[in-house]
Amino acid sequence: MDNGILSCEDPKLLPALCDGLSAAKIEALLRKWLRLLPHPFLPKDRAAGYRYQVSILQAEFSLTQVLDRAVSGRIFFEEVIRENLDIGRPDQVQLIFHRRVTKRTPGRFRTRVLTEGVSPSLHVDYKRSRIKQYHKEGRALRTETTINDTRDFGIGKLLRNLPALREIGFQANRRLLDVQRLSHDCAIGEAAFRKVTRPVEIQGQRASALPFSDPHVQALLQALLLFCLLPRGFANKHLRERLVLLLGETPNSMTAGRMTYDLRRLRLHGLIERIPRSHRYEVTAFGQRTALFYTRTYARIFRSGLARTDDPSPADEDLRPYFDKLQTAIDAWIDRAKVPA
Image 1 (cartoon, rainbow, N blue to C red):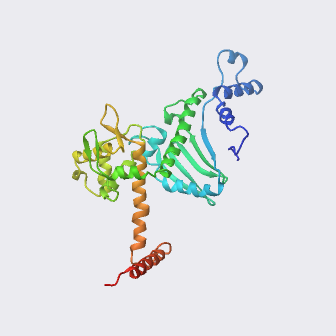
Image 2: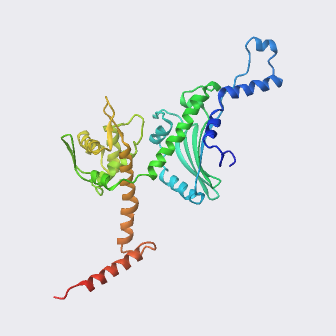
Image 3: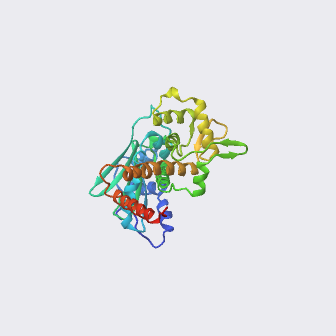
């Protein structure tokens, strides 16, 4: 598959061979050719310690995941793009690259979707490095991190830094895939759903329910998703700043005490947990799934679906005619079932 492996006889041996490309082997290859090719360093210069050193100009770390059913690959990848158009924001970039982003951090943080022919690709930029993800040759999901300046991560350019750079590159690939997996695996069971939508009592502490259709709860969980998986978690102030924007309120309208009440509800319901010896919180795995389920089901199914079936405007070509037929059939059945007075 060009620069990817489609299949091999020993899938377990393949990654071991790939990991074997070490700085020592690259250095040995260089020294072999320097012995054969002419260069300006004479023997006495080399004896005095003058020699070439290899620096890392660019490094690319990739993962090629071959799909069992290639026919569904493109549809899957387009869903991945749709769910992760905001992955390039500073909060999410910090998640992927595990580097703190402040107002003084140079570079652009953005997400781009490029289409070549019928195959789109997802690009996430961080300083002078980027992640590219695309559907490779219609058969595999390709995720590759390209680092153009090792100093973006506080690492030198000499070849001996390759192991540390390799760890950063592959971690970035895995974190991006983890975020995307959560967006496609957000379903929660009936018992878990009822646990969230009903009041709970944990060790004598009571917490009110988180109703599915409550606008405040929807905004709260939507704000919570902005802090999912952040290495350092979030504080009362951070969540409050985002929540007032989603609710359309002014910053002064929501007090720290009101936010503390919401944090307590989220904690007792198991959606967040406090980081030990701090006033910061982090989102739990259950919290990630619940927040995704609540917000995306409400926005994409309930709100848009009910508008399609209940709006008296011109009928929706997909759903409205079928709901009209269903309503007619129900009315007819009720009329037939009526018992005369």
